[in-house]
Image 1 (cartoon, rainbow, N blue to C red):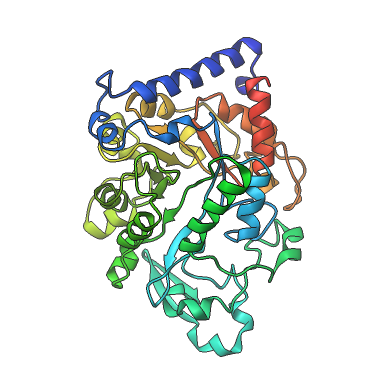
Image 2 (tube, rainbow, N blue to C red; image 1 turned 90 degrees about the horizontal axis):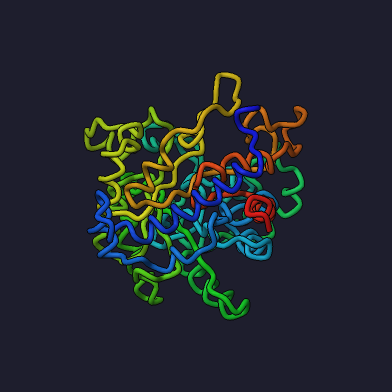
Length: 387
């Protein structure tokens, strides 16, 4: 699309915008920007501001190449150059341990259906208002979950990943924290992780509150400080507010489509939608307890009815003005996940032109991005920065 093409001068402008955003983020409190002082005073500039910009975040590890939320996936993300690894999406077991799964329903990410001893555990529950059928982590002890093995979640798009089905077990969050330390020693540089509290309102109602468990483990391993290499995220603002009272870590509010409501808002009767949260007033409110937002990419650049990118919104500038960093999600190489104008062919497992898409998104001034393909993101960043 012509509107999204850029010449060398525009690239230079984009790079200056990114640099300006980093400076603005670091100095927001000193400038007296709305909503930044209290959050930055509690959490400080923090080590997260020293991460490369744009930051490459390995989404569930290197999930473009390995079954997600496994040590195979996490390890490969580091090998491919990710600055941070999203390890992991945290859900509890029946006996209160935190494990890393994309969702509490594990029928699509493990081989549980092949275990006849667990056939009777299959059930239907209402998860954030949606009837969901399958097997749920909260119905298993940790010992039982450790008998399962991970499988590829989207085999139609990633048939080659099925080669690795059954190779890795489900990691616990405590194992991830130990793995982080081991990798930091082995690689000679600090490894960062970016865990998410999943469906915290749902689990709190079951007596399995997530935030206290997360905080307890972070304190145990000395990773609950403002400069600790652990960024915490959630789609529920109240979960981030609760974490803000428990730990000093940098905190990020995830934002879905503009017309949606966070589930904790729906449960509490709060009428605000994501559209309200991405206004200057909404961002100021978020900045009073968090240091960043993780918006869906469509909130940064909307798509038209045909799926093509249109004109960027003011979200990046508005968030930076509030002192927040932006880490949108999720970049993937396969055609179905790319904007229509960057697809090549129609095959569901074929790569389109992610480099072209990365370039357009980086030009908006985002501070980082979640990607299933860390190597692609790292190369795209090098192209963008002219290295």
